[in-house]
Length: 226
Image 1 (cartoon, one colour):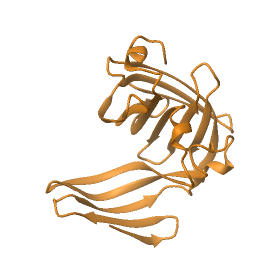
Image 2 (tube, helix red, strand yellow):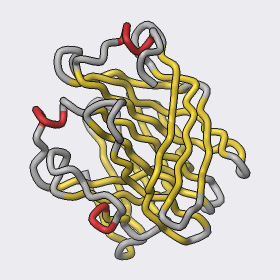
Image 3 (cartoon, one colour):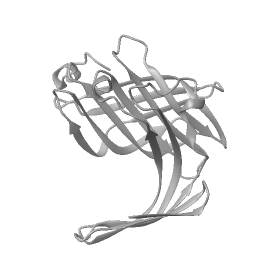
Image 4 (cartoon, one colour):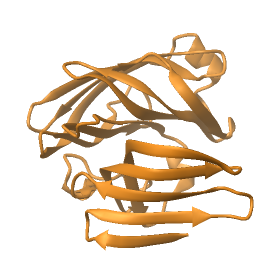
């Protein structure tokens, strides 16, 4: 796998292939400088990482799966964490993440909400980029529904940043998702779907919900947790 820097902090060429016919060959254009969580309204929790950053990007090229080639031309979210992750402490906390970008690059959102319980105040993390101005998220309000397996749907999201700008978005369901983790420790689902963003319309994005063991699929589907 190769990552070639074409232009510092702006463009990279990413390439990978394996003997089973899987790989990618992508031109990556980053749409903003790296957003450093250390500069945000709330710092990265020590148990999550020493620090982290996110940035939106545009990918164009080819994705190959089992020999089948797919053209790629879309936006996405790039992130990096460093330092030690304290998995035992991490598994005591809720973890929710939402990310989406408009194709004309006018809006980019990547936010997290973390904390020990839904009753306590959650930690809003991440950023909103709108018309070239990046600002830290200061408030995140959200709710969702869950099926018998605990898969999230009917997501409603409202994000306010330190400039007072508010972004409202909804996702009815994920087009595709993966489950991971263990019901005995930390478990959840993450996937991709369409957000309907007030004032913009349909944009593609992802969501990632992970839960500690005390939050079971049955408790979620009963409506006990939002």
